[in-house]
Amino acid sequence: MAYGGRSPDRVDTMAPPEAGADFERLAHAIELLSATRNPAEVIEIVRRSARGLSGARGVAVVLRDEDRCHYLAEDSDAPLWAGQKFPVTACISGWTMLNRRAAVVPDIFADPRIPHDAYRPTYVRSLIMTPVGDEAPFAAIGAYWDEVREHSPEVVNVLAALARSAATAFKNIQLYNSLRQEAERYDELYRQALQSERRLQVMVNELNHRVKNSLAMVQAIAAQSFRAAGSATQAQEALSGRIQALAAAHDVLNETRWEDADLHEIVQGAVGPYLGESPPRITMQGPPLRISPKAAICLSMTLHELATNAVKYGSLSNDRGTVKLVWALCPNDDAGPQTLTLDWTETGGPPVNTPERSGFGMRLLRRGLPADLNGTVDIAFALAGLTCRITAQIDAPPPMGAEAWR
Amino acid sequence: MTAPGAIAAGRRIIVVEDEMMIAMLLEDMLADLGHTVVGVAGRLDSALDLARTAEADLAILDVNLSGEASFPVAQVLSDRGLPFMFATGYGALGIEAPFQSALTLKKPFVLSDLSKALDSLAA
Image (cartoon, rainbow over all chains, first blue to last red; front, side, top):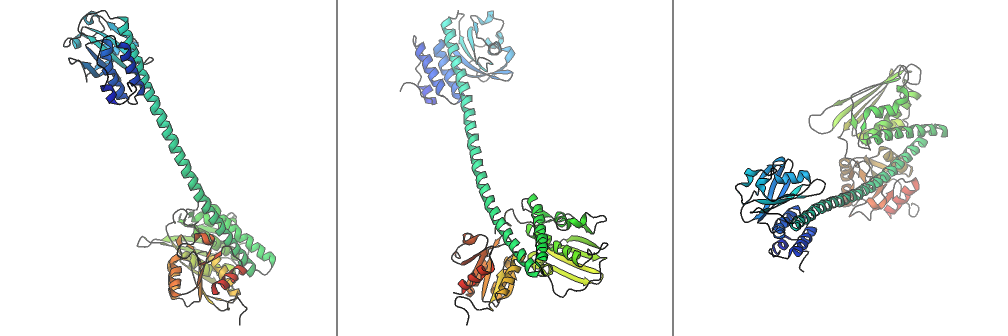
């Protein structure tokens, strides 16, 4: 295989300059340029092929670096300006890039565009500077001779052909890189989509478990409501109220995707209808506090039972009694759970009698709550009104999803 | 004598369930079936205590206790030779080794489901 290699080795194996071989040299250089994916390689191919193609004593590859021209690489038997930078407006490579056409200079000292001082230390007497890039040239190829000479159109054309080919190579590399980036971006999007799908599946599973659990709870609430009720109508009323309290707690929890709940909102959901009255029948007072989903549901049900009981027998059974609900958090010394104290105090109701048998609500308060919240419940049937003090150990809210795994 | 396939009433039963209302429902159902609940635990630590110390004939275990699996409780019961069943919304799918073959009561359940499960546990 004679052509088409794209490694730097292929550049090294390029044939040395030889008269009458211009077409093959040019074809070889174009072939190498079309195969490379690396800008540094483009510069190297141009550097190595330009001298042979033009028959010049030396060549240089110049890259535009903002307002400077960087003489990046050269192939010359005596050093020129490799590594140096000149202002775009003060060198011939800058002129050729700014004017988007080649500078063909038979005698540099007769041409005012040339900064003569920069050339005095060199052998250069004559040059062709060719821009690379049609619209906005970003590089140039310089070819230098050590004698004054009239340049043939063939030499000018072959350098222009090399420049066009180099410009195309740069453009292709840019295109190739942006396509590769695009492909990587799509890969990433695809990965993200797969991840989202997996997450969604996990969430659907969690939701299924949550729904299952809620159904089991509703079943338990229904069974308890019917068991305790004196009539079907009473059972229906009790059940509806309890399901509403459960639904209100769910509404609050849904806002945080079941991570935690604001105690204020839970209270509002549970006893909301009495807060809106003027003057309010239930007043609440306490700091903002976030509680776990379990505590939220438990407190919501409990407060609903207390309110229902107050409406039936307590301070909300007449038209002037009130309930005061006050909570506070007592920080513990260590980093463990904190103790929440919640006081429900009824005043202004009819004289209170200790009930003969405890209904579901009281049972829930006395049995369920202490177990669920790892706390205590003290109910006192004082003559002036029922009081209930609830204490609960408030853990940090559990991690997302822990509550749903059931 | 009891009816064939039905376990004798008066069994002492441990209930491990973190949802208070479901625990209360279980208590009532078990009372209806003539059994006695000797302890209810809703957290892993208290459930382990109960499983180690309670004078009981069998246990009903919820699988998930506020995010913690109840399998250590099952292990304690197993070591004591006490029969137990899981009650879970997962069905048998959520049960981990070595308890996959343990009896599972799928939530939600009704009284006859519970009664049948107790019979199978005794069989």
